[in-house]
Length: 126
Image (cartoon, rainbow, N blue to C red):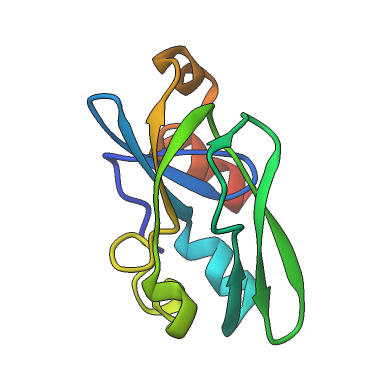
């Protein structure tokens, strides 16, 4: 199972890659594996901000639909438009081309509650 060390993780299986005040958010390899074949990602095209802990969209797989929860507060910079036509990018490359949303962090303090790779691995193998 790939759990990159340079990312932060939520207990809800989202990952966050931080570069200065910008954060890229997606779901983990573990989460996409549990969901199965992803067929649709629904994020409002007019989404302007996300709030930590609140749902910001849904991800639909063949068997289920799951909410996407914001790991931190921020202003939406970009939604991955490639997912509209190719939601399977999340299955094929969850930490790369399968990213979901980019934000400008409101506060880096939000990251303090996230898990590092070792803590996340412990959570999913417990």
